[in-house]
Amino acid sequence: MTTRFGPLPGPEGALFRLWAPDAQVVSLALPDRDPIAMRAAGEGFFEATVPGAQAGQRYRFLIGDEPVPDPASRQQEGDVGGWSRLRADLPPMRQTAPPRPWHEVVLAELHVGTATPQGDFEALIERLDHYVACGITAIELMPVADFPGRRNWGYDGVLPFAPEESYGSPAALRALVDAAHARGLGVMLDVVYNHFGPHGNFLPLYAKRFFNEAHRTPWGAAIALEQPLVRRFFVENAVMWLSEYDFDGLRLDAVHAFAPPGGDLLLAEIAAACRAVKPDAWLVLENDHNATRWLERDGSGRPRLYTAQWNDDAHHALHVTTTGESSGYYAEFAEDPAAALGVTLAEGFLRQGASSAHLPPEAFVHFAQNHDQIGNRPLGDRLAGGIAAERLAFLRFVLLLSPAVPMIFQGEEAGLDTPFPFFCDFSGELAEAVREGRAREFSAFFAGASELPDPLDPQTMQAAKIPWERMTPEALAPFRKLTAQRRRMVWPLLASGYRGGEWRQEVSLLLWRWRFAAGTLCLLANPDALPGEMSIQPRQDGASVGAAVFDGSHTRLGPWSACAWVEPA
View (cartoon, rainbow, N blue to C red):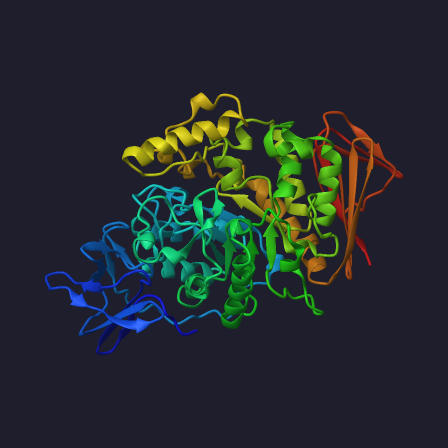
């Protein structure tokens, strides 16, 4: 698509552009040169052409005497308030389609800064073979847009077109994607279009109409998505990641926070633009509204707009079932945990506006843990640090042998208990406000909020780094076994066409049946501390975890045990 934001390098120089509808005069600043007056180009844009400007050229804009970075900077130098740079050209897009169909995805969510000791793109390349060997078929990077400082989850980014400087160069990020593809790994990126971070966002200085003060979000004034040019900014960003960095898909953060009615327009425009570049791109939503209209399929079963949604309902049901926690947003799921688990695995959403039962399982991404559900606990503690090994094994089995697309958080494949607390790199009053805000946020939800790790302490991020010495063959063996069983049992069914799902309960035991053209996937589970029995005889070529005894027409399952099998069509 034709871009309107960011610089346009050419063989004889570069055109620099800024959308500054509230500015009267805008200048272009280059090192060791007098400012260059930019000409008004209509619709609030200002432009200036610089003959001879080449890759690496540093620049920024002057609003009056105030220097500001390019909000569409493709590369930054000296953090978010420093110089923007002309980025060197990246290789042409090599993959017009992901390396495998979506139903074959086993996803690992990674934070670049803590996934390796070095915390950068180049070091992550060296770890890709690990994910392949584990049976993981795609990785999802938490946001990499440039954020203030050197420590952040990524959701405080303010320059969405520029990869975070501390992670490496744009070329290094592209090399990571290419290296993953060479190994048959798909790569997704988490993008944030619902807010900018609290420091380093200069847009209000010259483009107040980028924000809608009448609509408030948890981060302040909403982004004014009713403005076509504001939507265009984010559509161009989404297309850039697919076309220039060759990502296979995107996960859109918290789209329920988009201001109506522009939010719906943005979602439709992003889907259309991305599918024009890669028709089978993996486009995934985080959406508390559980709006099934974004996930509908056409007559051939292909997504019309979005591929899938992170299913928080399934997470909450799994979490309540295995931990017994019932505070905050877990309360609704704790009223009848078995029913919540039954519905979410069979149909998708528990909290439904329109029913999701007609959607295929691959319209949902299921997980027992992710960055939010770990990091938004006071200590950033994982399930491995708080529940028994048999319950962890049960969770892993249900996650990988039910048909929704499974996702793990980095290190979960080895059952690591490494914490992932919230961390950032602010200073002054903002740093103190973050500390106080975290304490307030947790006081009503969790006990012990006074024990919070300091999010500003560098050691808090250091504690979250993955201890690779614990990724031993013995620790990884159970996960590898389950991914192999998923490949054998589940993938062929998902490829054949979905016919519907159902579930039933007998005392503590739950039985799910997902019907496909090629057969029926069955999963019998006992999420309870007491043994249970059901009148059913599974096929013996399936899989099991815990204690399962098959006696004629009856099956007895021990506490936290499960079995799965496929019945032929």
